[in-house]
Length: 315
Image (cartoon, rainbow, N blue to C red; front, side, top):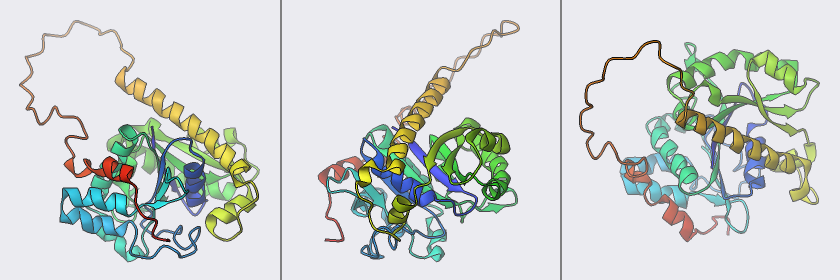
């Protein structure tokens, strides 16, 4: 499955889009609310029914306690978005002042999400919030950069307005450089277009020099419900927003699969001349040859604990 990170230059509906994609997934799905500026799902969709005792900050505390503690805490701090528990959310920070405590925990959390996707079959959606820059690069505290580095796709969420495009234009180059230097490559970067404005997909793509990988319609009633400011629409599951989000996930899964194949089987070019024989490689230590999940024992128990289920803290 895929790990998709959503970001924005300014508030453009990242959290609402992430919720729509998580709720519409036909597979087990997880929304990780990782905006260092603080989460809104707790006070929004959940109407403050989830206390500060549940959520992202506690994973930073657990990560310092040891490898197994992180796996246990990750499963325990998820909240169900549906009765079956197939769709879950990790509520975000309650206070932006908590963000510095997560700086050393982001890489471990990125590994957990990678395992949930690759071995657990989850669609993982990361709400990384509003981007912050420092000297032309992603801010080390105000942006969860390691989560973007490990994602299959990083989508810059923009509205179809000139104002939104003007703000997003300044973020594309730093993001592209970041994914080139530390992530899975610049082709992981694309646009999620919110169709709230006059600009068409091809105009947005030309303005930002990025592909529009998915688009969601502007549906105020469903968006208001997901933001916690309106009632649930009748026939929520048949809303245009969730239907389009389901289609978008299919497109993103296909894009991620193409990227994975391209990286595994890159196009070959005929060499200009036969190279000299390379020296025999040094033996690889057994530990280095281990798969990613074995190399990260802190995530070994996550899938097992998720399978056991957990109590909804609202009950």
